[in-house]
Length: 352
Image 1 (cartoon, rainbow, N blue to C red):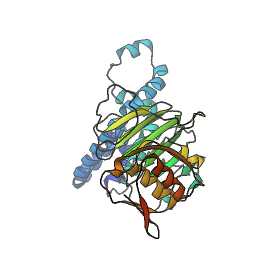
Image 2: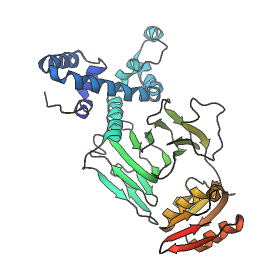
Image 3: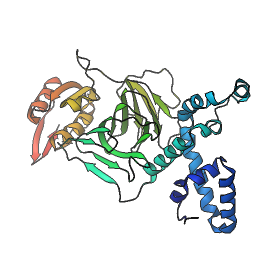
Image 4: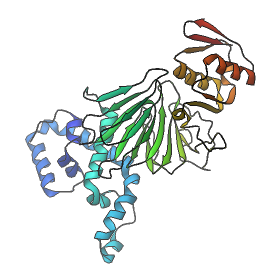
């Protein structure tokens, strides 16, 4: 057997995956022999098993319905009746063992990747970039953002990591699910159009679905995966939830962890706030000045400071074109709710 130096080595081995889920007798015997031969590895093997179970638990509800549909034609009516109603993933794994393994491996890569073999795309403040990945996925990267494409993308995984904001038209590939990781959420799709916003200096992350279907996993939160329909948006808190979106569900399992909302139209053409930046527009709907300031900083490559307590909580609704100068934007905001601003440095604005 090959050498295993870390939990990562075990989780990236498909035979270990089959051993843990007790899928193949030969794999079970192989790993039992391995433990007898290398008893010093027992602790690491157990840690890897625990990690695998934790990751697959998050995928259980995502995969259950899809895998059941694949499994159903293989079963006779009699066998089908004997199947327990409880959604235990082991009953479905046989129908999609490869896809499930790839999903778990991809999530592990996203959550624990520390290699230097990834391809990195980045934008500076006031810069945007369009990228086409090897699988045909189109990505528009907003200002001050970074996209890391994991090593092996398109071959062993379709995993990327995002810091900032990106609009994505994901190419379809049912055999290789597309996974996007951020510091707060992970999103898994087969082929869809969505917008993800996860800036490091904001207190929430957003995943907005335009077409297709997607599931959102909240990292470090005891919340079941969230399935999105077109025009749904998840706003997940980093600390306490901060969102001005209207809740579209009466009850949620943990309202402090996330909010499920509808995407917002801002004009008679039914254009969306969430993707307005891809059309070179800055759109704010009932948004606090503190949040607007962060967008302006990225848009114009400046720094905005607040000298008066409380002013940053004032809320505004406004829309601007990319071509508008910063002074024009500030004057428009100032006309809506009075404040003063002045330039205090080469690229610094003070508001009071």
